[in-house]
Length: 351
Image (cartoon, rainbow, N blue to C red; front, side, top):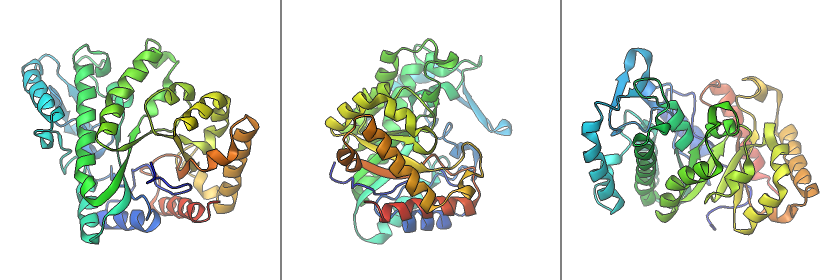
């Protein structure tokens, strides 16, 4: 994974902008070594991370007045055969565009691709992203209000849908970059072990994550996962992930509790995307109280804590990229600009 460089910066994806050109300018100026396509959830409800992948999901029904969707599994039975036929063809390299994320669901992908094309040169690395299996499967409900992930058929459909829409993004952006860094956004895993995921086993988590991770790696992507809450980091490191993105500002100390698993993860070539710049937690004004100096100090404190736990500090520093702690979609534009400015500053002075 030579495309990843120690201390390089990227970000999670969501931005508060309604002006796509301004969003692209911020991303390309701040993150020249690994820009991402901007997810502008304020444009329309279908750009929200939970709804973004629902095109071609059998039985999907929109409720525009509530800015929501649900799956009618009874009516959707008639659509299953076509879905599986199209999915099998796409897995065999034919008709992948059937699973494209359309402009009404991801306008930023198309604007980003156009901007990269106009640059006239291939980037070493660009980033794409999509909601991950548990966050999607718990967010989308059936007609009776049950999370679709528990349905014996639609649970499988969702995994295939996410994998194919992710691979479509990789194929679309490959023309403009040597490598694609692909993040699966999985905030739901912060609930692992709690009431909401009480019936979900470790094997269930690994199986569903790897159903999306493995096809992406086969497509040539460097695959990361973003979880902005605390979770069982040891479990996450057992997956096939190349990169783990976590909120270091709030949860850096919890990663140090898994020192043995961190050493194994680094030993197999894993990287950490350290979310050192706060965004939405503990409150929306957190970023106003921090600056480059305070966050640089916090990052080095985390490195020291990891070293004290037994992790080789030099090896860890060589396997770190920097990000905000989470997306910026609920911040103001001024706050977002500060987040991107600070992560860019820390990246440029990384040592």
